[in-house]
Length: 98
Image (cartoon, rainbow, N blue to C red):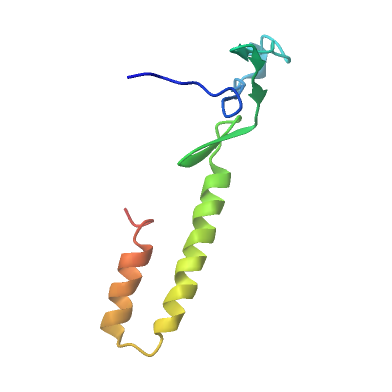
């Protein structure tokens, strides 16, 4: 299995310590991959959004937005019976009830 690294898509994130007394440096050296410098970013998207402060607030906001979209889709079924509405609600919104 070959591993290809693409310098244009590869990024770096600096995770700063929560205790500011342990900060070693405020600037970091440029890291290169195949002669191309890598970008430093504040957040990474790997299914979830992780920021450089190790917070997932952006990911929670994204999931909340998706749940609003799901609720708006369920409004179309307002004429259905209560049983059907409950089943649709569980199937579309039980992501948060785990």
